[in-house]
Amino acid sequence: MFHDSAVALNCGRSALAYLWETKKIQKLYLPYFLCDSVVNECKKLKIDYQFYHVGPKLEPLFAESSSEGAWLYLVNYYGQLSNEEISRLKVQYDRIIVDNAQSYFQMPVEGVDTLYTCRKYFGVADGAFLYTDTQLERPLERDESHERMHFLLGRFERSASEFYSEYVANNDFFDNEPLKKMSRLTQNLLRGIDYSGIEKIRKKNFAFLHRELGHKNQLCLNENEGTFMYPFMTQNGALIRKKLQQEKIYIPTLWPSVKEWCSEDMLEYKYAEDILPLPIDQRYGEKDMMYIVNSIQKLVSLVESEECTQ
Image (cartoon, rainbow, N blue to C red; front, side, top):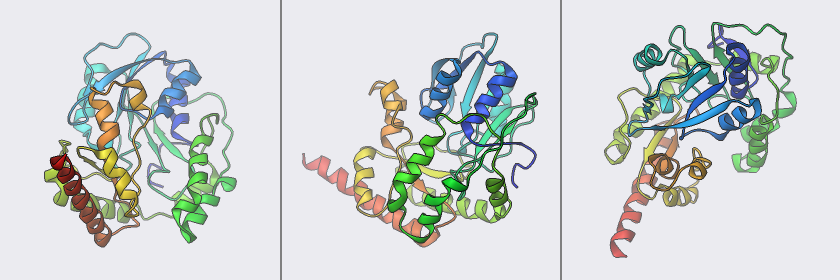
């Protein structure tokens, strides 16, 4: 397995729970632009938390000094946070946790607690990895995945839309799941994956979209080729997202809860509203990427022309 030397757990939330228990975390500084599962886990574990902002390059804008028992939670959005920057933040703040859920192939910085999740990248129902220098003293129950595989098998033989409700239910399932070891089924599936081939395809697709759409992208992306999705930010992103559904291109909103925490004049609100995470995964090739590019360019031009006539 990729990350074979890490602690193998049932989900990303369990990675945070593992650190809370071993590191005695009392408080977390969290970015406003964040999945609500992390916030919900903090509430569940009774971890005090405080939000901070991110900037125009998706970089952390955190200037406070961490108090005793407090940790800085860093989200590596679309792989835009380099290991050099993580190392600098480690020196500056010491107690940091890196969320590499969107950068699976980026290896951790030595001595930095780093977590990864598997569902965003591969055809598995669960699974997460955690790099840490502490070990849980109590034994953990092992998870079982066989009853949660139906939507994945169904999506392979039929359309994804038929099993969308099951997919959502599987995501929600982990809200109340306890900390467990990764299931044997998930581990076995992860041992049968061509990681280098998948990384190559994802980077190639990312580079293609950036080459074709980068000049219109309102995000300041660095030169590193991402492997999760291509974040295309445009004015009226929410409207374009709806129109893309008619083209059979389904773009998620990352993350809708952000708009509940933030006011409309905050950058994080605009990120949640207008960033279109475009698919680049290993199921797709250049023909698919060109279909996405053509659809995006057509809809952006259409929306711009409609604004001009109003």
